[in-house]
Amino acid sequence: MRFALSPEQLDFGTSVRKLLDAGRTPAAVRGWATGDPRPGRGLIRQLAGAGVLGLAIDDEHGGVGAEPIDLVVAFVELGRAAAPGPLVETAAAIPALLQALPDKSLAGRWLPGFAEGAELGTIAFHNGVALDADDAEVVLIADGGQLHTGHRTGLVRSIDPARRLFAVAADESVAEDVADAIATGFDTGALACAAQLLGAGRALLDSTTGYAKQRKQFGKPIGEFQAVKQKLADVLIGLDLAEPLLYRAALTMGDSTRGRDVSVAVIACGDAAYRAARAALQVHGAIGYTAEYDLSLWLTKVTALRSAWGTPDLHRARIADSLRDAAERQLRGTA
Image 1 (spheres, rainbow, N blue to C red):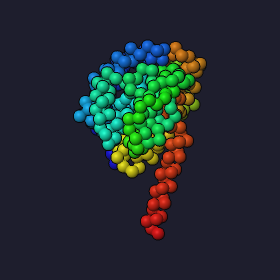
Image 2 (tube, rainbow, N blue to C red):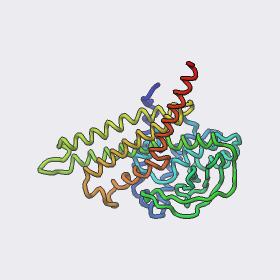
Image 3 (cartoon, rainbow, N blue to C red):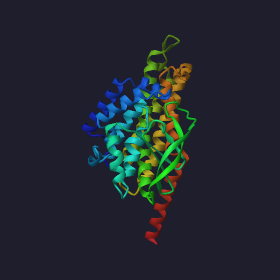
Image 4 (tube, rainbow, N blue to C red):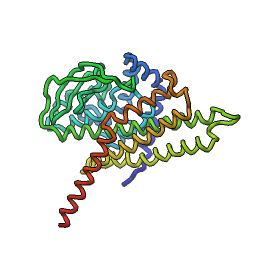
């Protein structure tokens, strides 16, 4: 199995990164957090113009119909930039869910608007909480094998101000007995979240390394101290080890091990990004706590994303269940 990206995928990631760097993303994040989505919406339309929002959408619905690995490439860069908005829901989870339904009319109804960046979608899985339900044109609720449209009922506290969470209630049932499609949507969203975490971890490492080269203590940069070097080296190792697990999950989205591989990627990327966040906060010191300093955008993002698509305990349980089932099947086959 090939875990190295192709030159075309590397070029695509670079182009997405340049777009986000030129889009004044930190300002868009802060605007989103304070209830002004206009800068963020403008950035999302630019991403749609570059094809990012249509990667998981088939060409018959106005998308690109790309592979999951291409989606991962894009979401690593979105995480690196801490881009705001329900991007996982709009560009990954909902498209995968709708296109897995037997009835394709819902995909034809909503996905063209997603691919163009004209509309945003959000979805609540099981817990009745949806991201940015106040700004999304399409609000869905997936629970108990059924899919409903929904509406927001109240604001839910979030550790990341730019991730505005809302309790939602069901309106109209639009699909029944679609547990498999819902599982596909959840796993695709979790995969994109893992990619965001890896990208955010990379951004934190880059920022902290740059700061350690400039900040001086006892007459020399703190990056020359062995303790700081070791801490940042541990972060780099963690991120580098998580990356192939993320790629494997993307490459096995059509296999029977999909859920297990996605959960492995979520845990690995989440732990690596959290280690990067802790190191960043320790190296930066008190300035890292201030909301005015851009580092805070990534610190809160990583903390929120670690449980946004299932807690670590949930994903460890999924891995254990998958391994147990595989062992039982092997025993039955040799009995």
